[in-house]
Image 1 (cartoon, helix red, strand yellow):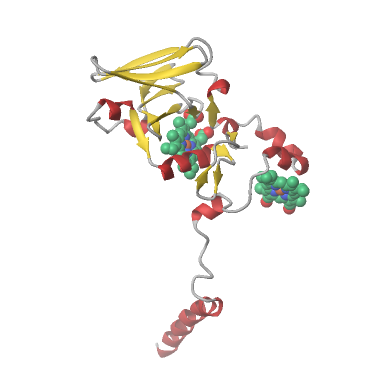
Image 2 (cartoon, rainbow, N blue to C red):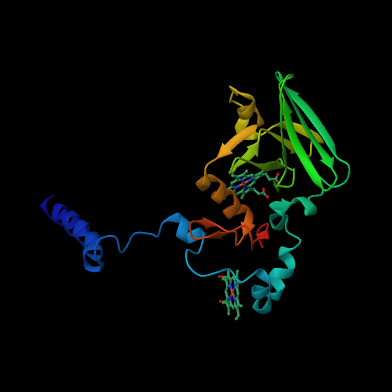
Length: 206
Ligand code: HEC
Ligand code: HEC
């Protein structure tokens, strides 16, 4: 009994000394965000990667992840004279093209809110959700396009929420960190440390 007890003490001690040797915290894994996103340096663009990784970069363009986000001019679902509509309780939603813009609008029967769609997240297999901007904030559309329905229905995250205003019925207002995370996973190079830089990014995961 006494021998196994001292073995236990030695095992505990043995397991602990590397920590004290390298200083507290040195053995801790880096935070997830540094593992996901480089926090320093600029992304030079996937063309640079292709110089040394030609095989991988050829395949990547066939991969659905390379279309995880589409700008309006790339988006097949919104190409042409589109008109998608649906109603959820007293709110009616409409997505329709007007010239070079595609407008997203929601109406409660007396008032209407309308904004141009800026980005399309996803390709619609599981859903395509739209981003629009109002008063300096990004919003995620409350309805999304679903390939299986060939039309609109509630966005997955919106199913259990009851909007208290027309503004809430239009979509979810995203704080800067949430918007940054959406772009961080669905684009290449849109995130520079904790900043969003939407001037130079590649849509989709390249
Ligand atoms: C100057 C040449 C060069 C460039 C440019 C380059 N790489 Fe690499 N990369 C390499 C080499 C060499 C390796 C190591 C390959 C090995 O170990 O088989 C590597 C390894 C990798 C790996 C790890 C592969 C594995 O199987 O573990 C990834 C991921 C990677 N590169 C991504 C990129 C990305 C993304 C870019 C562009 C931002 C890039 N590389 C640009 C040369 C390059
Ligand atoms: C941690 C990474 C990550 C974050 C953050 C993230 N996503 Fe995603 N998202 C994914 C992955 C991975 C998939 C699955 C892609 C697939 O199946 O091809 C996905 C799928 C989706 C889809 C369905 C895609 C389809 O093709 O049907 C939509 C829409 C979507 N995300 C929107 C968003 C929005 C909006 C945000 C921010 C509120 C967000 N995502 C944040 C990684 C992320």
